[in-house]
Length: 216
Image 1 (cartoon, rainbow, N blue to C red):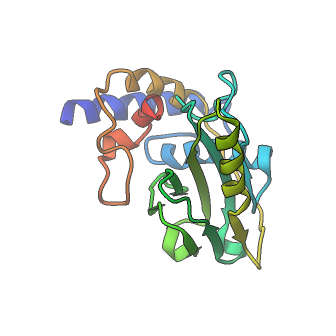
Image 2 (cartoon, rainbow, N blue to C red):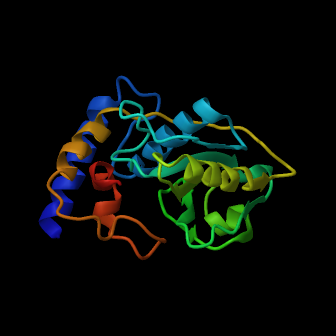
């Protein structure tokens, strides 16, 4: 663990210094996680807007993956919220035996909540731990079965989001070369243990970028 930590830190710091000339905010080992979150939060906001969600109606095209290794039997959805604008309430319908989940992701790349049950759930800045929150939706589908597709679309339509004080605004930083170096290192990891979870439950090394190449 000590060797892996040392190698990771060296790569992040060296690449961060090389990126200073191109980046508005220099990326180092101390701020890489927040910078990586900015990358994903910014891309989702540019595609879907701030303070709302977008639910894909079909499998993700192979050349348009927003994260690495997206599943072909899953419909995804995402949204970014500025919690300075007020609490966000998300209502999930009853999916029965079908897999459906809502994942909450903080700016620090922690996962304070993963929800599988129907109901209304409210999230505040104190709950999430950071100003911005990303929501990730997943629902299982058989894309070759027209009847199943219709059922899944009905479930998606039943998902509701409310933020009376929103939407707020998105303020971004930037990062470049550190991510590429960590993607190469990620290929050496055998599994995803310790990469995802709440603060205090994740492995500090795996969480800082090495998870990039192991997402599914």
